[in-house]
Image (cartoon, rainbow, N blue to C red; front, side):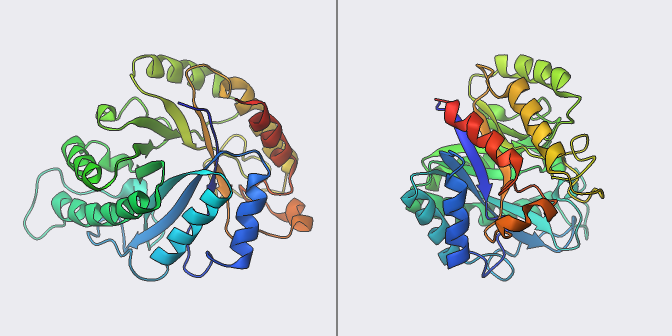
Length: 309
């Protein structure tokens, strides 16, 4: 498998923010970092963690036309594409907490109901991925409480393969790589590599031992760090408060790339993230989010990506 020099583009996929001049500029600027892949990421909503209906055909989710535009634009720029539909909770609770009773109880929401809706959601975008020639399709992201439902995930993957013929991956959450029991059902293993800057030695050793037992490639579908003080120790906490610090973000990337980026068993990154609507480059120092546009971390990433073959 070629090394994935990737970036996640377009999150959260809010209707009206794609398929316009600003979005085209954003994706073009992203390619200047030497990327060869992009994960085009969009979100659909269920009301709360115990809701069983996923609303993907209505606002605020981007339209199918916007999704197709993003894929076509990326392909025109010479990028390979992973389409990544993600479910979120409208009440703000993280999707990792979507959960139901293991045994069905009358009058309570059920796994079977949720997976039926989730399968319809995923199959819809799998069809778009197939029709547009996406090289990879991500069937889920950081769904920690669902990971134990191996039979349902295997059934979903089987149905996806009926409509999509490309590479299938699942993006497990940080620290969950060794907990998923159905990795054999996907083609590529991926996870969210939001590990603290002082934890890389331990995590690389753990991941190397994990990867050695697999018969397929492993990469980070997400990894990154906001540009604010304290974030290098809690890179997964997008709400962490602290002063702006482009320097701390850059140091995090330097350490991460040095510790794991060139390991022979590791196959790359879809870094987090690059929005469809960029802030002005002159205001980069006042932007404390994950995007590295106009920040020192962008140069660090570009230098690393351009030396990978």
